[in-house]
Image (cartoon, rainbow, N blue to C red):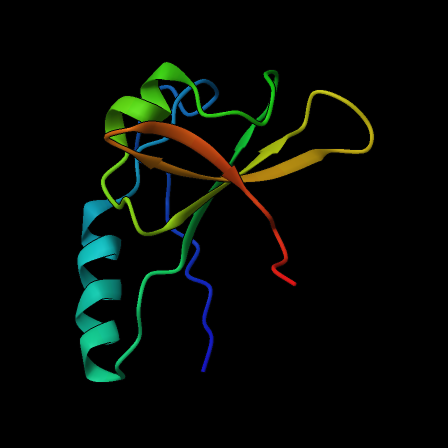
Length: 98
């Protein structure tokens, strides 16, 4: 069973930064243990910059096995890319695997 959990942005300046509500993250992980789920991806948008992990995204990445899906809203149509972010850096991955 797949599930998308949309979390609140609790950063004081949500126009330029995103901080996930930790209570929601805790609850999502608690529920995942109940139903044998795993964290597959984390997504967020970049309203005015490319769909590439920013220095902040890279510094705050906590789940090296998860895909980080970024959507750039700076143009039409929006751009969307997925990455793995880990100790060895950033690696683009396909959004859909063959």
